[in-house]
Image 1 (tube, rainbow, N blue to C red):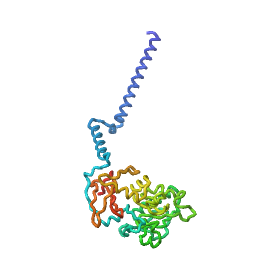
Image 2: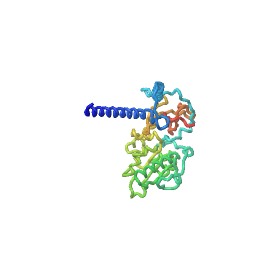
Image 3: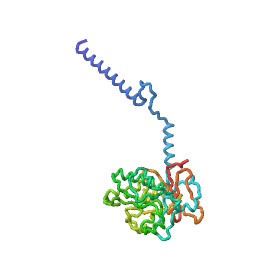
Amino acid sequence: MTKKGMEKGRYLYLYLITAVICFVIVVIVAVVLVYGNPFSGEESTGIIVSESSIAQAVSNDVSIQEESKVPDDGTVDVSGYIEISVQHSELFEGNLILVTNKTDATAPIKDSLDLMMIYGNKQGSKYSLSTAELLLNTEALNAFNLMMHGFGVSTAETHVMVNNAYASIDGLTKDKMFESYADLASGRSVRLAVYPSEFGKMGEGVYLWFSEHCHEYGYILRYPADKTEKTGAEASATMFRYVGKPHSEYIKQNNLSLEEYIELIKEYDYKKPLIYTGLGGEKYYIYYQRAVTDSSTAINVPGDRAYSVSGNNTDGFIVTVSADKLPEQ
């Protein structure tokens, strides 16, 4: 064989060896990607897909969709609902009680408001009090402390003072505050101020934060400037009312006063509730049940979902169902 022929054969041999090595590397990489490292001695973490597993996944997806599906007419599946009895006294209790400045306004019973001293229960939030005797509903106070913490983190301001909190209707009338701040009698409202005043004014500058973000903590601006005809009170940038979520979120998103919201809910019952998805993605069913005069009222509620019932302080009850949450045991 000539020298030229020998060199050609040697190159062919090298090409063949290189091709074999490349093929082996490709096979090894493919095995590692699919089955994990076969040389590590550890159990493979690869996923084996079978017809049965695919069928199960499809079945689960369908069942989830069917469970959350609501017909186009707004009705919900009430086959799992049960009937509970609510006492007439509970008409004047709950986060959605409405106290207006009308002469026939019903005064909530103080002992039913679950009031707590604000002083000594600020939970580290930085704000001042006009007096150490201020009272607020316990749930509302916890939410207020969170809101004040959020305000402090967002603005670094600490010059907010609680001027007023719970007051009886008689006390408000005596102090000539009933027409402007009747909702203080709910035990869930606070009237705020900037103190000392040289640091600003509620509703202006950094203090606009409250009207823009209070709904995130379950609060609403009680007397908005564009709702005086509905509330019957002058606009106030200082008065905030706790109604709880998701109600605060819905009121904010739809630019409603509390009066308008209470009337709106009366259009819905347990079969066709107001269906609302909160800012956190949670689904709620909200509806109304007229109260039976001077007697207990039967209300339909889900037996397999968490719910709450609030009186509206006038003529009925508002039920809030957490459609995605199981009841507490």
